[in-house]
Every structure is written in C-alpha cells, then in structure tokens.
Image (cartoon, rainbow, N blue to C red):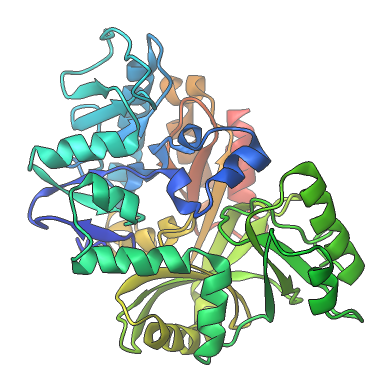
Length: 445
C-alpha cells in the first residue's frame, strides 16, 4: 500500500526511518478543561493509544498508555498479536506485534511501572510518564520519525522545535483553527458555505445572548469552542433548541460552573450530518480522502460512521468546493476534517478524526482484494464495541470474524483490540441493516 501518511497527520523527521506511533485522544481538545468539567476525569486518562494499532507497521515503535498492573503487558501483547494476525490474513498488512518495539506509558511521571511480567517480551518496555513523554524519549534516540496525529505546539516543543520554523508556524494555524469560534469566522469570511454561527465569551453579560440571538422558528446548537467528540454539545434532544431553550441552557451551564470560556450558538441544519477528511495544499487545492455519514448516540456523541462508494460520489462535488475555499483561506498545508450538511460546513477539525480508519482502509483496497478477494464498496466503523479480554485471548474474536465472513461476506477488522474497555472495529461490506455487525456482537456476548 502507499506509505505516505498525509491522511493521518504530519510525519516529522527522516521519512526513511521507522515511525513512532502514539495517538492521544486528549490532544483533539483545544480546551482541555472541558474534560474535567463534563467527564470528571483527567485528560491523560483518555490517552490509551490502542486504537492506533492499525496505523503501525511491524518495524514501527508503538506507544500505548495502559493500566499499571501485573499482567497488563501480557494482555497488550495478546491483543496486538491477535489483531496482527487478523489484518495479515485479510489485508496482507504487517502490523506491529508483541515482537515489535512497544512502549507502555504509565500515564504520569508519578506512577511507577510494575515489575516485568512473564508475558512481556524483550521488545516491550515500560516508561514512566504519558504518551508524549514516550514520544520525546524515542525521538531523542534518533532512530525514528514521529507520526504526529495532532502536530500541535505542545508536541513540537517536546521535540525541540523553536517558533521560527515552518512546522511551528503551521502548529499556530492549527491551534487557531481548533478554536471553533475562530475557525467559523475565518471560513465564513472567505466564502466557505457555513452554518450561521454566533460566537460568545463566558465573560460577556448573560443578556448579550438574548440581544444577539434571533428568535422565531430558527433552531440552534450550543457548542464549546475548544471541544471535540461531541463534548458539551446541546441540541435539545437532537431537534435543535429554540431561542429560549438555548438561552436557558447557557444560563444553567453558567450556574453550574460548566460554561466554557469560549462557546458558540449555531443555527441547526436539518438533514443527516456527514463528515469528510481532506488534505489542503494552502493554495486553493485540496484532495478528498473520504466522505462518510456520521452516527451519534442519544447524548450526541460520535459512535461510528458509514462510508459507501455511492455516498461519496454523491457528495464529492460539494465537499471539493468547500475544501478548495478552505485551502485558500487557511494558506497552509493541513489535514482537515469537516462536519457538514449537504456541503454546508458545521465545523472544521484540523487534525486526524475518529473516522480516520475509513481513509486508511481505502488505501489498502488493492491489498484487501488480493488477500480476501473482495472489493471495498462499504465501510462501517463502530467506535464503542464491547470485546472482553477473554474473547481476545480465547480466539473467540478471530472465530467470530471467520463466521461472519462465511455467512455475510463481511470482513471484520479491529482498529485496535483494547483489553480494558471498548474497541473500535471496522466492517467491510456489511449490509444496510448492519447484519454482520449485529451477528459479530452476538457471538461475543
């Protein structure tokens, strides 16, 4: 498959070297105080990194933050090896395994690693600290390039970049675009079709909201400016809030001490929400990687996506139009994801998004056809699939995948098998009712 990584982020360093792969979920939040306000946890607790397993190669350095206990290394080794074999068999990909260089971060410099376990191979080592601590330590050894999923200023500082470099200047642009208030202002001012958006600061008097927000039949969505993953998004049951409900919600957040420092109230657009990922060249050109339908749970949180060849073809002209206007407006090379309704942009995410497995798998299309004998027509991504460790270790995951393939012709490819929580799984060529996904889940219950 093609070895370029622009659909995932920046490859920093000598591209001929192996890669350091560490995907921290918390990095997608511009305002990390939201994690504590809404989810009552620390940012580091979101950073597993296991979901990045499908982006590795056998020679890469894979970094994950895992629980610090006696058999954690053994569990991770088993999960990596099971997933390695699944991808090798059905795509020909040679992902990292327990014999690859694997760094297990404890999550904090204050947390000591456990003693070496019997299931821990010589290539698997513990590091006291978080994901970026491990990345920086491996980077200093000069043996690998960094696959930067979110190449922000914090990571670049860890790697020793000063402010007067092209990479650092692009990180500044990325930081500004990760603020949804600034991003929507920039796009609207440069001719990108956007949902009408009203930007606010928590320090503004409460009556400002009433003064600026039109009433009447218009419905609204309330969003934190620095959020991600649906955190803090209010749609009043998914139908959009009227003026009174939006104002009341902001007042309730203020009273509870949860009102973000910067937030926005955006017009609610009726219709299915789609996502797209693309590469902007900064000169008015863009390359679309994929366009997908987004799936949300009752709380408005992203839980999956569906891509189809026909669906992408139907929306590509609208997305290209938006992407070219964004490229000219941003003026820098950048990986960007957008949420949109019929080409009207709701928000921009200048980084890898949760739907990245779709673009990644499409790059394996020829390998999948050669290894499994199927062309990719549809891809379903489930980000919250419960797969217990007992099923991973016993062979039940592999067996369930075999059974589903025999019955439905659907390939089941875990993005990464998480022995401690939900896993993310890709289904290739499931039907409209997601019958193969349902059958796979039943076999693991």
